Structures are given as structure tokens and as C-alpha cells.
Image 1 (cartoon, helix red, strand yellow):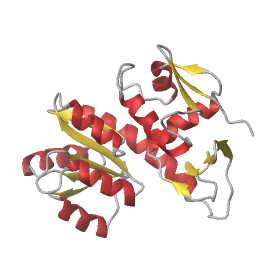
Image 2: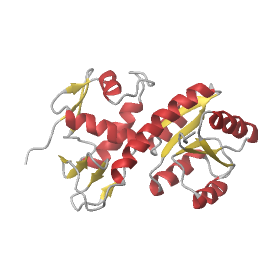
Image 3: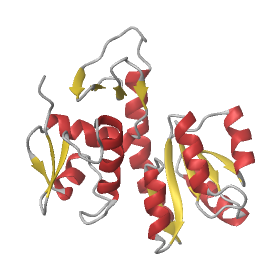
Length: 240
């Protein structure tokens, strides 16, 4: 049976790690384990997984610190595991670049559903990027930047890559495909195929704030992605 992908599980509870490993292995995933940040880095030296599952409440280095480390160095999916009801950890996790989160205690089936969603985005982004480096994809101007729809990359004016999470790419792609159109949170969730979130979930707002920091000349006074009070957001292409 072909592998569904490789998952790195970072959790200092051996029982939790074993439960996740057994469930994912039964469902076709390859797994790696680590009980700390140091062990995670050692595992990454041997193999880079498709997705990392990070428990926020680790010891010396917490999951949020490790998520930031991964996002700065690797193009992989990141799912945070938070305590039930701990909204602050979820918000901070998304701000440092996590693709999704799941709260303990969780049903393994929910974990698998979220994992499959992130894995799909990771693999869809990796496939075009594996094409020859000299190939120029379909690039759409976004302010002073360019969004390469083929390689799933955001490039600055000097063609240097600006890191995007898979969800940030999905959101930006939806905006450039629907210019000058007000999109509600519910529409954005539908168009990015993230129906496991709810329309009132602030995750959309957090990711749009992150996008603004990457594409706007002045993120505090955005001109590209405008907020439309009580309605949603609207992308206004810059006119040159």
C-alpha cells in the first residue's frame, strides 16, 4: 500500500505519541516521533516529513517556538495541538505560521481529517515546485509582489521568495481570482475548501493580517486587501 505521507509527532507524553502512531500507521501514514525540540531537530536531520504535529505544552521549548523554527526553515505543514478552550495558543499558533490546530482531547478521526486537509495542500504545492527551476509559471501581480500560481510562491520585486503557508497561498489565490468583489468569511472558507472551520472563526482574520504584512506597503493602512465592515474583505488590484 502506498504511503499517505509522513507525519512527525512532537509530544512529550509517550502514551499520546504511541496512540497517534498506531492510529496513523493503521491508516497508511509513515510516522516519526520526538519528545522535545532537540529530538525534533535530530529527526529532521534524518528526514523531512510532510507534516509536523506539535503539542503546544512541551517542556523547555514549547510548540509555538518549534512552529516558528519549522516555518522559517522548512516547507512543511504544521498542525498545533492545544488544550481545549485555550484560544490564545490557537491564535498565536496561527500567527507564527501554523496551518491548522486541534484541541485535546481529540477524536483520532478528527485528527486524520485535519491531517488529510493539510497534507493535500502541502502536496499540491510541492508538485509544481518540483518542475525545472528555469520554468516560469503563471505570475499575477499583487502590489509590488508577484504570485506564481504554478509553483505556489509569492515573490518580491527582486524575485526573492516570500514564505507563505499553504492556507495563506489559498487565500491570496482566491483574492486575485475575485478582484473588486466583497467576500465574506463564509465565502472565503468555501472557496479555499476549509469547511472544517466556521465562518465566525477568527483564523481567517489572522491569516489576512499576516498576508497584509507580506504584500502591503503599509499593513496598518492596507490598500490591496480592504476590510468591508460587517461584510468581509475585498481585494483591490493596484493600478500602475
